[in-house]
Image 1 (cartoon, rainbow, N blue to C red):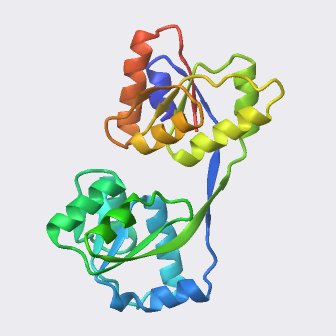
Image 2: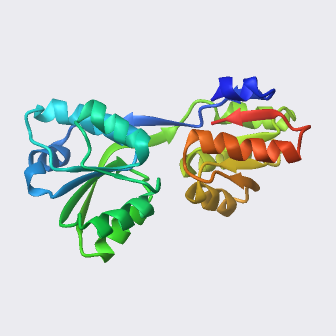
Image 3: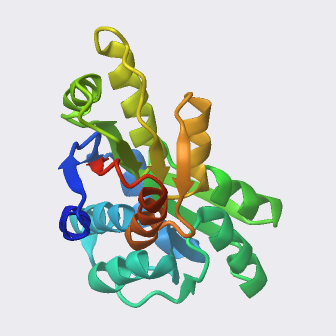
Amino acid sequence: MAAALAAQGAHPFSYPLIAHEPVVLGPATEQALRGLASYDCLVFTSATAVDCFAALHRQCGADIALPPIAAVGPATARAVAKELGEPAFVSSIRTGGGLAAELVSAGMLGRILVPAADVADPSLATELRKAGATVQLLTVYRTVPGPAAAALAAAVAAGGIDVVLLASPSAARALARGLEAEPGHPDAPPVVCIGPTTAREAVGLGLEVVAVAAEPSRQELLTALWEWTRRNPERRHAAIQ
């Protein structure tokens, strides 16, 4: 993404606000994995969840058969194909709520296992349960603070950042915490969000959301940024979380 920004004349700075920490294979996780045959569907909403689940699956025993797999969007589907085999279903709407609606329409209900982060958006499970599915969430990784929140806050305080690109609600929370901890509590620059869930979190934290990607992808996030910078050509210093 930094290269794409620089190619368009922006001055990008990368600040990892969050990191992903895979969970250790414990009794509860192993029980869920060994019971995969009892599920009608395995649902993934991110490539990170796929990678972490696949690692746990290998530790537990890669010979354990998998139920049909559903994935949200092409990026997650590619990760599934690489690590676990071709998915049985790929949603055209790249959100958890959109995936739930399409699964319901396709009749893919029953017992569903959703490997995800510890802070995953609950909308997928909520909508599936409303439709009659039995949903179990399985934490396969945790979202932890990244190393650069303080550095980004200092850059903001120094006036070196015009806009921040946020790719998750967790990143929005990390940005707000970093600014709160910075001496003088500098005002946050405008933010461009990868989707409505991130935008809602940002607004709730008091951040100024100036653009939201039409779909939750890096390309659409860049498109939203370009549209904003065309209206604000003097603001070209972008921080990428």
